[in-house]
Image 1 (spheres, rainbow over the protein chains, first blue to last red):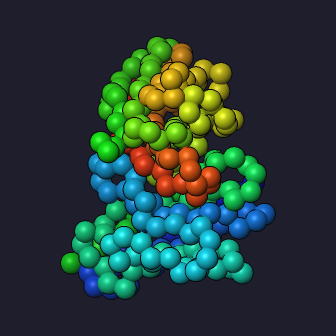
Image 2 (cartoon, chains in turn purple, yellow):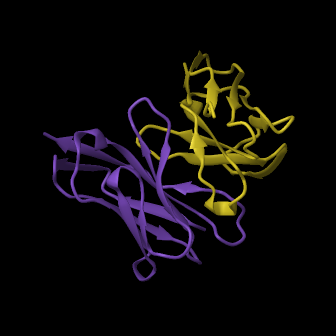
Length: 115
Length: 116
């Protein structure tokens, strides 16, 4: 069975500082990997995803994530935080082989950005 | 695309009542998903449809829950004999269904259910 662990339910950074949100997964084979963002009073939207190929994936709003198979990780980063990045971020996995299309989400990390 | 819409946005009901939620996916999206999200947690998978066929159901979906997508367009999620533990945000998402498990899911705003 697949699972996702997001380290840290809350992360606080200063505006302009590096953002690092951690995600580790458990899966018998490497899954597809996603980061979704949920702004207050809005639905979840995709930030980026890894399916195949280059392990460094660039997404919207300056975010990127790197798939590291050896570490079973898919951490999300952004070089310089902006106030508008304050939101909840969810890491998710879905199977690449068999197992249907059931997507498993992590518990989320709420990002606070201080002025 | 007008996006995924869900109705109602909020529902307050008394324990034991039945409730039904509706989800209208992005037009021509073949796949439709239902999730439940409680405070401080990520979305939990409930079920998904490929066109009108319900292909997978979570064990979270007890016999009191039923979902339909009769013509492969909109979907309904019904909860019978609601319990206080059913209080949550119910999310709907849709995707094209063309990329297997790599599909990007587009989420609606959710229906917040409160069971008194």
